[in-house]
Image (cartoon, rainbow, N blue to C red; front, side, top):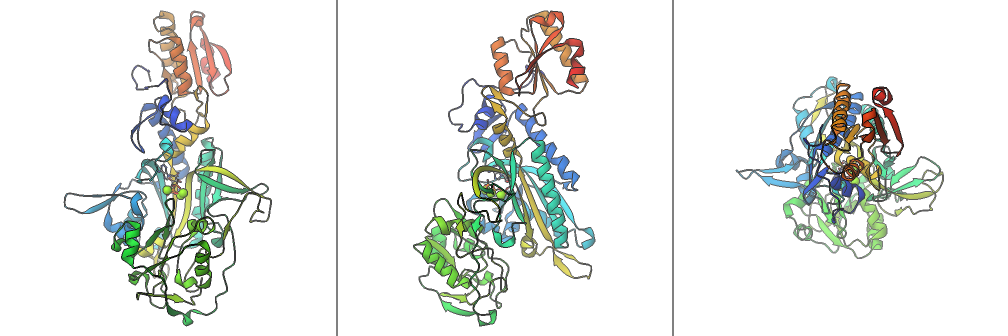
Length: 562
Ligand code: ATP
Ligand code: MG
Ligand code: MG
Ligand code: MG
């Protein structure tokens, strides 16, 4: 591509509102432009990088038999209502109405859409497993869009979903995806780590985040200095055993819950409608944290959660009071998925807690003497403390250290969470209808691009790795008004192009200083300067990353590039 034909609006100054290096340089080197908060346009160079990231991902997905599809971004509310996420997802979900007032969401993720697609089509175990992926814009109305592409409100994601007849089949695919992700991030040259991203209760085998180690990361990783243990700090709690269940499920009884709030008061607190609180309850511990209390799908003595319209909120002043409630009476909390809220117990005073999720569909009551793991599944609760730097590693080897990380990927065993809600079943080999067992696997494609940009740069600009550099070679004739330089530049450009190299030719009539500064800024791996020595057929070559320079004879160019 000739620079006069393309669009690379470089900037001399660092834009004032760009806080991190990747964002600054992506703007300065003319790769992206901000449209409005968290929403970006990709200019030609940015688009090429993005496409290369996509292609690495595609190749590795296909290598593990994940097949590409393209699902709609605009999704009818009814699908999200089936799983309750229409109510629980909160303000991050972008919602809109069509001309008839029918409600839609802009896809923040695609579990509902893909599950609804399969349930109508894949009815036999013989058609499973199936692993489908797409690369598409996602929409999330992030509270704090920031750091450019790292946290956008419209961003590109690769999301894959797998469907299985057996847990073993899901395990196999999960392991394949783990390997594919490792290959992808390795090929992109990232310094990353796969970390455990669920509570210890399920062994940390079913949910991993891929973290790029970086000072600007918003997540904290707790890792062992002597073993491979690494976990998101939110999940690296020091585990305390459940209090032994005192009674069995049959002794479950309904008791009065003190200090209650009505569902409409909860709604008011959350700034939402009562209706939205019914299926899944959400509470905010403070301004920073939004915690979803998933209702689960467990029937406790026929008291179904969906009948829990009389759910109450108890206001508690201190973490001790919360702990007391949790440990003395698990039943009052119910099938709560608490991974991110564990942190709250340790660090914050919980002001509000939702109670009655297990049922007790009568105002003012909840259940006690429920046996955890038997009557319903609980991940973690009670007396947990977050690991600190210097704690012994939970795996018994070494000592915990902290590091900052950028979450670039996340793989997750969903189980039947979505298929049950959406009645998405297949017939197993005995002819019985079973819900699909599912996994989901995301990569933030545009975030990955920013993470690479953050890592591959120096004082003068980008130092792109070959795998995703927008072009491989930058040919820079110093003086375009000089016949010889211009002619040789053009000749080399044609030669490399016809040999299938990706080349950018700086054919602008600009001062040498401007051209070199822009070339450094853009950061293509190899720069070929066609200057004064052009007349002798000598090219000045610079490796952008190492700064090494060479002189090559014109006729040896192709051999040297090999
Ligand atoms: P985060 O914790 O950073 O908010 P997440 O856990 O909400 O991310 P997932 O739902 O796991 O994100 O989505 C899969 C991947 O999509 C993430 O691992 C991340 O790489 C990317 N991603 C998520 N949110 C954004 C965003 N706002 N901008 C860019 N990429 C994002
Ligand atoms: Mg998020
Ligand atoms: Mg996350
Ligand atoms: Mg995640």
